[in-house]
Image 1 (cartoon, rainbow, N blue to C red):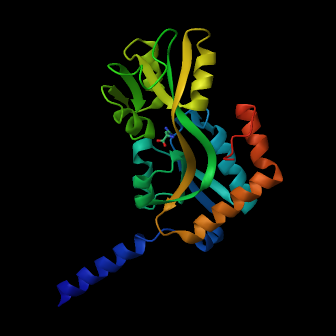
Image 2 (cartoon, rainbow, N blue to C red; image 1 turned 60 degrees about the vertical axis):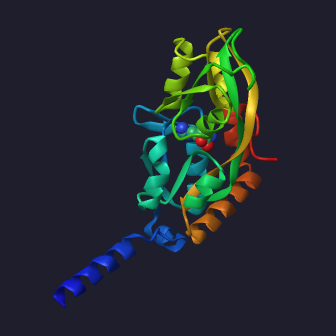
Image 3 (tube, rainbow, N blue to C red; image 1 turned 120 degrees about the horizontal axis):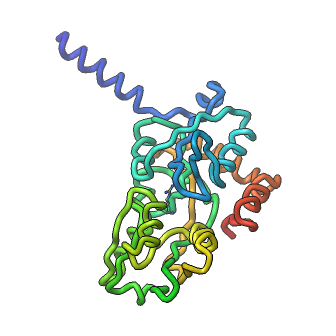
Amino acid sequence: MKKTLLTLTALLTLAGTAQARTWDEIKKSGTIKIATEGAFPPFNVLNGKTLGGFEVDLANALAKQMGLKVSWVTAPFDGLLIGLQQNRYDFVIASHGITPERAKAVDFSSPHYCTGGTVVSKVGGPKTAADLKGKKVAVQVGTTYLENVQKLPGVKAVVFPKDTDAQTALMMGRADAWVGDKFTGIDLVKAQKGKLQQGDMLYAERIAMAVKKGNSSLLKELNAELAKAQSNGNYARISNAYFGQDIRCK
Ligand code: ARG
């Protein structure tokens, strides 16, 4: 009998911690916990102890509109949605494209920007999906870049834990191309002054914040604050600072 009771208690405790914080609970606590990778310039970057980038500035602006302090958490990209499942933070903003696969595991907000995966190579290298046949393509693990490159027949994906490592592999000649974000590609080509070229966009994607599946109160609040930021000038100001343009989905 005692054993049964203990088991029940354990189960209830587990059920209790398995609940994500609702918007009311977050608001009452005064602090919202947000996770990102911190290695995906210009969207989320950890420089020493300073976290910056478009998504970090945007999320800080949303939290400010909410009247909350932010507690930032950084984790490797491929562990971010798992941490959400484990209630380690309230939401994730790390350039996740909305995919049917991911939407089974988490709930996505309205998109906070629209972009796509593009090919970057050394001048004279592959530029199109067809050009990539028989080539080595560097991509970050757990991304839509990997997913889409794997769909191309005869392409060898070379996978790296960080997107910046995949870029380095291209520069070092360990890959024939890098497939990554359109805006990251623009910056990369610019920084490498004449050495690189940006080819085709292989696919388009809508990027959104993720909350734990079923956390509808927080999702509603995030969507309301994003819409507000997109109408009060906060979004346009931050986007222009990083991209010289407004990258919201049209
Ligand atoms: N947009 C791509 C995806 O949805 C890449 C995201 C990578 N994000 C990052 N923080 N490294 O998979």
